[in-house]
Length: 381
Image 1: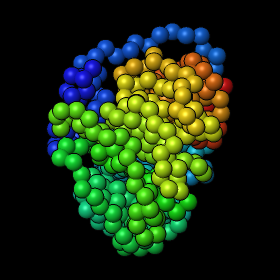
Image 2: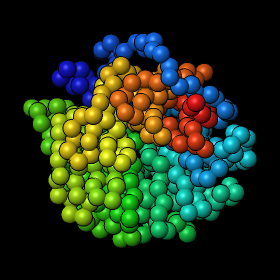
Image 3: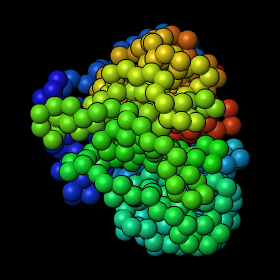
């Protein structure tokens, strides 16, 4: 296991230098056996309401955005789209003029995308350009907007706060990074005026949205091992937050939850994930570094259930809606699991590409985006 992880991380570090976005799990699948999908009795069905094609996402994790009945999505070549959520009808398409590497972020009347050369563009909901700015390096995660501030994270580890009105810089947060880091699409989570972000070396920080001042910083995990590769313990997914606590998980490290006010540790457990988790009610739903999906008690970290039948299938971050937990995989399958026990209840194969980003809730169902540019609106029955 150690050898597989080291090989994976070696590749991830090399890929970082050559601007690819392949993630560590993808490398691991070459050295280990990928789980074959087993038949099961479906207790629900998945119906495709509509599908559309918007163009290849390339190596970028281009997450669509849903605002009301609007779906915003982008392709790697620079096109941004607005579709009608109910029908999938294309309402407009614009050409940004740059390679889109991150997006889509949406909110407060803005639609946001980022580029490989640090481009950051904000459009109105009608597709008109509001402003364009430049940040320090490539944008790898969807920009976020809250309370009049656009927050964008760049590949050099910096986080920038910009005015939502005109894109002028309001603050900049930067920190020293270890010699070796895993390239990731980790962005930021904003809750009640605080920006939460995980970093290389297993650190979690709470940063003021208005001024960029650090409220607190805590360690999710500590680097362990004899070599630089073994000691990589980066947080490569989004922190999750509710009214009481914030939780983060590191690759080759730990899962930990903290009090949101002071950053004091509530609990932790050894667990590795590069995909991330979602916090819903009393539970954390998580995909670990091997693609195993689990449900944990948010107050203690104790396991409620675990489904290991998607091992090394590059399983996405879970999406929880209704009585289900939904994940996608590298072959373009959507898997629907029972929220109670993690058992499979339904499965759907898309026609193309991998599902690399978590499904989104849309009009009582789910929105899927494949790497080859397929958009699918899916409704469970």
